[in-house]
Length: 70
View 1 (cartoon, rainbow, N blue to C red):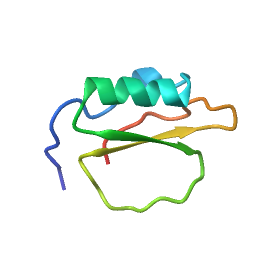
View 2: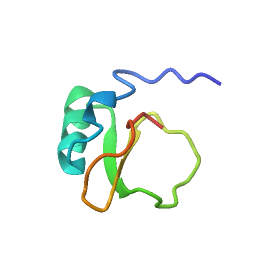
View 3: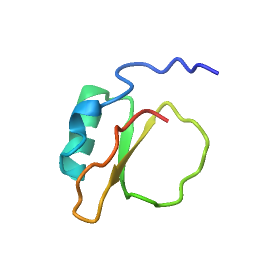
View 4: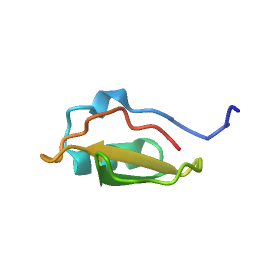
């Protein structure tokens, strides 16, 4: 199923950046989303939401995978 969410949908360029800085960039580039910084391995729901971007970070607060809308 393809969802039609407004604005930018993925941020590969923030992998390796600090989580909070990545979240700020994501919210600046797409004001329709709320970026949530989570530690890698944190359990999350599987529902899809156009206004949510999860930013997964390691123990050092560094983004470990491409944040996407969902």
